[in-house]
Image (cartoon, rainbow, N blue to C red; front, side):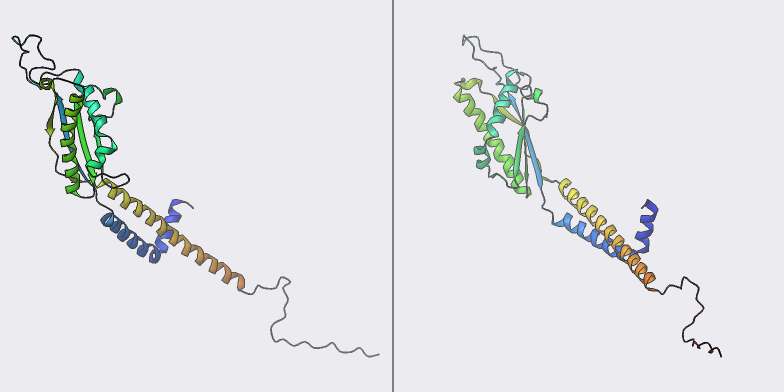
Amino acid sequence: MDFWATVLVLFRRWYVTFPVFVLVLAGAAGVYVMFPKTFVCSSSLVLTVPRGGGSLPADPKFPNPVTNPLVNVDSGLGLSASILIQGLSTGEVAQRVGVTPGGRTTYKISNGTTNPELMITLPFVVISAEAPTAREAHDVVARLGRIAQDKLVEQQRALGAPRATYLRAFEVVPPTTPEEKTGSRLRAACVALAMGLFLSMAAAFAVESGARSRRARSGAAKPQPSLNGSAYTAGARTESAPLLRR
């Protein structure tokens, strides 16, 4: 069936397609409203070297020059950020912030790029969380930020680094105001709308097919004219031929 024939069927069976289409719109709106909401929050940290550098002077009389930590970018900061990201991506940290496997609350920690080659070259730690409520998303990001600060100190203490050379995690972007993630709700509503339109077309063609079947049966039930062209009519009487006399 071509396009215009399909459109003709839909318009001819408007009393079926229109109510179903209204129900489809109501169903799509209901899916959009009832679909669980998701809120997103994020923050960013950057690792910096102390003002005196990452090493102690050999002679205390000649200390290291004091520099701006944001200008003193060391090649080891990217590796340190990568190690910190790995330490924050464990199940123990997830439990500490209240994230359970299979739950709706999730978080992700990266260096802000999806390129694996840049994993150990950028000194950033980007934290993002998704939760069913804005408050929970904000709390998860805030707790992860505090844990990142503590874990960075623990890692350097475990390596025996001098206290004066400890790297610091500077909070470039504090936890942002949670925003609703509407993409999932829109996709769910679009899927419901597409399925409803398909059901509307199926209902219209089902009614059309039933109507054609009834017309075919009614046409087959009508009496057919005789094939031999007999002139006999209903109620006509027949008379016997007269007997031949001998």
